[in-house]
Image (cartoon, rainbow, N blue to C red):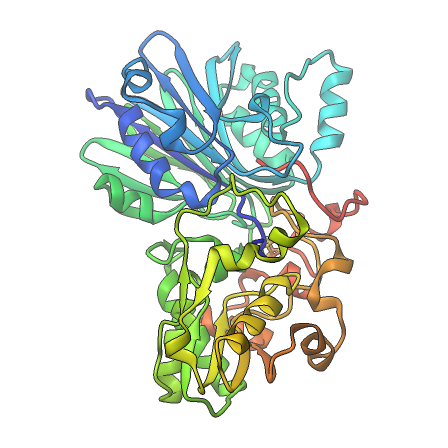
Amino acid sequence: MDDKLKEECGVFGCYSNSPVDASVVTYYGLYSLQHRGQESAGIAVYNGKEIKVQKGMGLVSEVFSREKLDKLKGSSAIGHVRYSTTGNSDIKNAQPLDAGTKLGPLSISHNGNIVNADVLRDLLEDTGRLFQTSSDSEVILNLIARAYKKGLSEAVSDAANTIQGSYAIIILSNDCMVGARDRNGIRPLCIGKLNDAWIFSSESCALDTVGAEFVRDVKPGEIVIADKDGLHSVNNMERTSCQTCSFEYIYFARPDSIIDEIDVYEMRSRSGEILYDESPVEADIVTGVPDSGIPAAVGYSKKSGIPYEMTLIKNKYVGRTFITPSQDMRERAVNVKLNVMKNSVKGKRVVLIDDSVVRGTTSRKLVEMYREAGASEVHLRVASPPVAYPCYFGIDTPYRTELLGNEGSIEDMNKIIGADSLGYISREGLVASLGGQESFCMGCFTGVYPVAAQIGRGKEVMGDHQ
Ligand code: SF4
């Protein structure tokens, strides 16, 4: 029903030496990161003696009650919201994961995908380590536990230099909280301050929610430790370069977040302006597919002078539990989620803007719905280039043959969509909307990845998402 790449996960943590209800802060932080994962949620708290973990399947509001939070008292906590593919949706893989180690109790929240996890898991199993889950995060936890003689900071550093792929990690111990980002900064992680407490979060929108002040982003390859002496940075990773996932800006992140100093809403609006420059069309109204197509539609309208109109209403209550029992109802799934306002489009030439198109199934249906509602022309404009390659960094991507971006020319793609015209922003246009630097992963558009050497496990769909 939802023709989008699927979000990965969200991580949040709060460390304080003062009496702070860290699990409550983390609960509200996770609430703001709910868009990053709806399959499971969890919080681990250090209560002065041990790390206690509560996790469950479902939304943050479903997993935690007042009573459950009351049992998670402590001044340091980390949390996680998780998305997973069907069949991989298992409480065992819900996070945070925890373990008793020679470094003391440790708990980890991880967003991303470790591309050499299988090899590392084999090596660890050969040395007698046992695994409880199929999660890459347990591999990281084991690597850290194995290097206990070096102390936590160096053990994390060693593990970070061994694992390859994408990760934003938060680790909780009995005396500190550690945040780390992969050497390419593919997944985001930022730092905030809430009175005396240090906060780590996937996105800055969660800092706003808990009332924390934004401090800075964790740099690619950086390990940041919050402890009783404050915040320390360990920056010993070689060959770091910023290659943040461009899809974070296009679709995943909330528009009120700022990632690596780029305002997500402004970027989306700018992409709409560039889209008009590259793919203009004469029309009566511009409209956006909710939610993430709307800022680009506003930008397209601003640049073209064509008035913006809200013409699609989204049913806010269609969630992950939506079932489509019959083929007939499956056909109508888009109608359940989105409805066109007939009076706003009747007899009009409409430019419909979406942030991205993956399979093209929803776009085809939407074009049909606009025609049925009486639009005289429907022109689809897309604020990202055609998605033509899979993602290896924790994003659920359909098989290549299912991607509309593999259909050949724009004309060929439009034969499937059925619009009066179809236009995508160019790769250069996307880079310009991101500020002009070539410091982003564009793998699903170009097939060129920041961690190219490690890819080749023969999988087109990465099923093990953290
Ligand atoms: S391949 Fe695409 S979705 Fe995956 S990290 Fe790169 S830009 Fe993001």
